[in-house]
Length: 208
Image 1 (cartoon, rainbow, N blue to C red):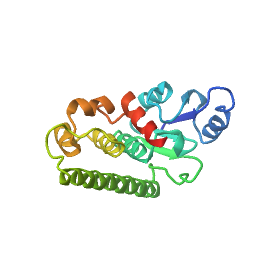
Image 2: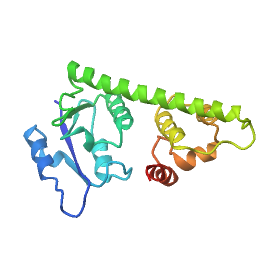
Image 3: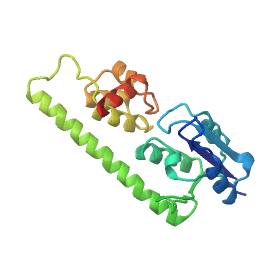
């Protein structure tokens, strides 16, 4: 029998947002109140104890249920990697509302819809690789071949995040492709593609 495990997240802790709306929707969808895990933090933060406990509670044959898809992750690629991990564990994902309400990976149609998301994420990754390689070639054309490695850039960081989240990635090959040292890579990105402090600072400075 499939056990439904719910996850609720609000991004403010000052009381202006509460979990009631999401929890009511989860219970209505069949999730027992005792099987709902909560966080009150930004989706971009890696430190989400409620989400970590939720993933730990899921077992093969269960389904993770969320109110909207944006309650789960930082960006499209993170979501795709998450669902890929759930699928490998034989765990389904159901989204109740929003533009992604048709996603239910326990059904054939739901898997098809999420396959489109996965294709878009792969397309985004390909564009990042293309831009990164073009930048490296342009730098080499200006005589910056060899010597001190190029520094980490936002584009390289996004590529590193996507690549580190894949088990087949070889760190040495990734560093060679990006033109950075292993030490530099791990200063910005963790082993599973999670952003570290320097990585968060780099992306934050880009937005200014």
